Length: 215
Image (cartoon, rainbow, N blue to C red; front, side, top):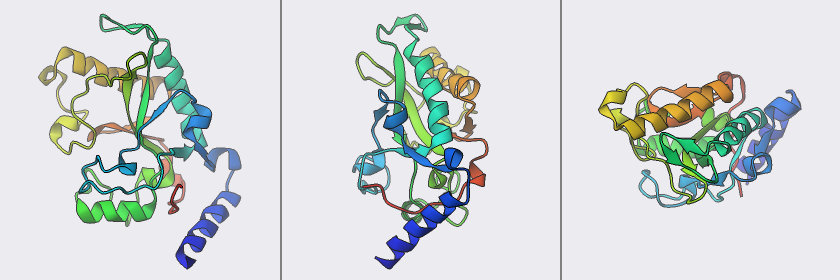
C-alpha cells in the first residue's frame, strides 16, 4: 500500500511541476470516441506467457499524443477507397497498448530480456511515459484488421520497417506504408524501426517514467 501511495504522489508531483496541457495523461476514448481499444496485456492473449498484466482495458496516453492520434484517426475515417479496395465507413485505428506502468515493464523484461523488443526498465520505455502506442488499422465496417507484415509482438526481423517491401505482398507493403505515412506526416508521430506497430512522440524522453495501475 505504501508503494502505491508513493507512486501516486510521484505521479501527481510530476504533473504539478510541468505544463498541465502537455503532460497530463488522458483517456484516449475521451479524445477519440470511435477508436477501438483492445489492450493485449489486459488479456491472456499475449506473448508474455499468456499473463494478464493490466487490470483494465482503458487506454491512457499523454494529451499531446492523443491530439495527434485524433488527426490520424480523422484522416483514416475519410479514406473510402485504398489500394483498389472499398471501405464504405472508412478506416480507423485499433490500439493494442498505450501507457504502461514501469512495474509491468519490469515483469516483461524478466520474461523476455531482449532490449530490441522490450525496453530495459532501468532506462524505461516511451510507453512508461504515456508517450507511445502500439496500433494497427482496421476496416470500420467489419472491424477487421488490415493485413500487416506480422502479428502484434512478433519479435522477428519481418516486423521491422527495414524489412524490404518487395519481400512482402503488395497489399501488406501498402498497408504498412499507409500507417507509417499518416503517423509521420499527419500526426507528427515518430516510429520505432524494429516494430511496425510502435509509434511514439519525438520528444517522449522529456516526460517522467510513471508507475501506477489503471483500474
